[in-house]
Length: 247
Image 1: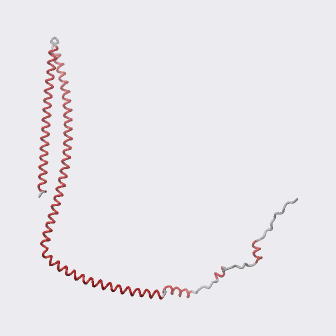
Image 2: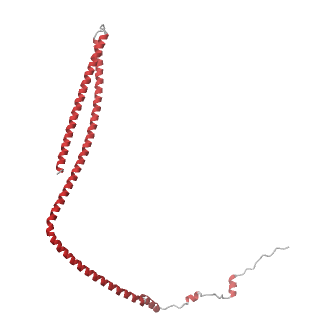
Image 3: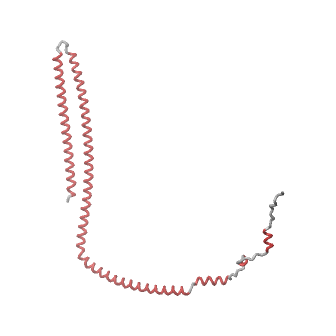
């Protein structure tokens, strides 16, 4: 058996279209569009002029509206002119009345002005006095805090000095006793010497304590006197500053 023949004959589409002839197309062609009737330049000018002029009905409507608007404006102007005349007359009357009343009220106005100026000056003086008092109170507080700090520092330094003095005095007493023991012979009884030395040291310490306490008391008294003097001076200053502000 032989192979099947699957070959197909080739048909040229352009040649087929030419053989069929011209196609009857439905609708206008490009040639019809190019050959359409066109207006001349004169006809175009006439159409543009008609568009610029517009319609007659619109022009008549605009004229009527303008006339009505003019009438309304004239009425409004007449009202304003009549109102301005009446207002000018009223103003003239008020001016005359003010002139008459101004003669009588000039004296009263001057007195009121003086009273208002005096009240303003008093208010300003009061404000200045309050500001001065605030500044003084702030300075007083700061000085008191600084004084308290200095007092605490002085107390600490005094305590340290006392401690150092006590230590040095004890060392001196011990050295003096040791010297006395070396100077005295060893044949004497130790009991009587030890008792006398201990009593002597106790008396010395008691005297030193008393003297130190008296010094502390005197220093505290002097500090209190200084504080009292400063406080009295500040009170006097405050009274002097408040006395001119009060009237």
